[in-house]
Length: 403
Image 1 (cartoon, helix red, strand yellow):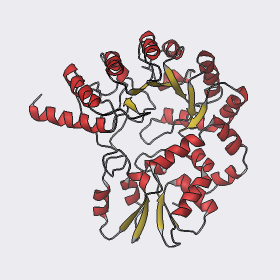
Image 2 (tube, one colour; image 1 turned 60 degrees about the vertical axis):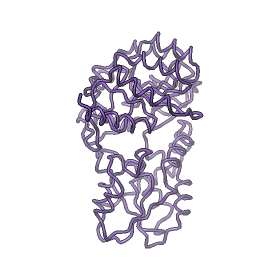
Image 3 (tube, helix red, strand yellow; image 1 turned 120 degrees about the vertical axis):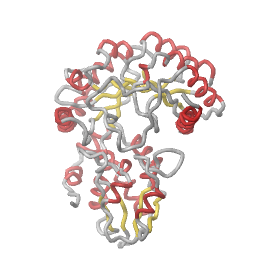
Image 4 (cartoon, one colour; image 1 turned 90 degrees about the vertical axis):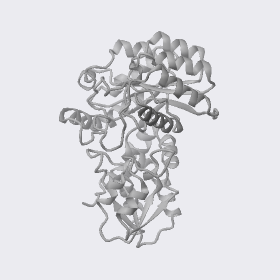
């Protein structure tokens, strides 16, 4: 590798580290090839090809991390890079060694995402040795017969269950794909580990997901109410959360959405950007209070419907003759570095495309607010009692978005 290439690579490492990521790389596309993977097509955002992380690379990364002060309750993330392709980094041959070195030589915490390729005995030993410092988010996805279709190259069910049986796993995420799918998985996981958090919901089909997988995801959405009620009636000891469901999140947080909208003090003539589910809330509860600029999630496509995941390109397609447009801050919070959307496009570049339009940023509508509310009202109990058992939710679902 030339000096120039090395410097460029290290600049990418520094960007990731600034966002509290541990930027390991497999040096290739993820070999797991899950059919539901949102990274199957990551052309919507800029990524950089990086080689397999070597010991020399790790030494640089680790020294950079060690030089930064430890923040209370902060966890460094292994998996989910901003500037590099997402892969299951448990497949890196040195991953476990470097995780152990990280824990041994720093006082920092680490969050690990994986479908379960870690050595069960070793990850359990590390969890025992460094209590409270490993946040292992295990992507179970499904333990049912659907698993083979979704992740034909994934670890075996036995491997996943062995990892679950112990102190290492702090949360397990799995989804509804049909009758007796999510509910059976919840019961089985809870029997093995009653302390790990259960993350549940559905997988959202995006435009590049194949037809068979898309059909399965949509089937899961149809059966989500029944599956959730079954789990609710089980009274499991685990904390139970519903996530990935922006319609449910928007409805359960409708009062906060309305309160935040009111606090923005917009005039009736003002245009404000929003995705479909926020549009439904405001159309239902604040009709005519401003001009609601519905923007579909066209970049991701499929069934995506979330203001946080809008891109500037999505917004650009809806601009006609507006002179002033109010933009939620959350659209431009891709990373801690600058004002960019999830695709990496900068706010400045977007503004330059429309020199005759004035954009006003609504700073009250930000990722801190959306993340906080996601967790506050994200319990399965909230979904069953506050959404499924609330007749108003049907009225919300029936609000149509404009073409």
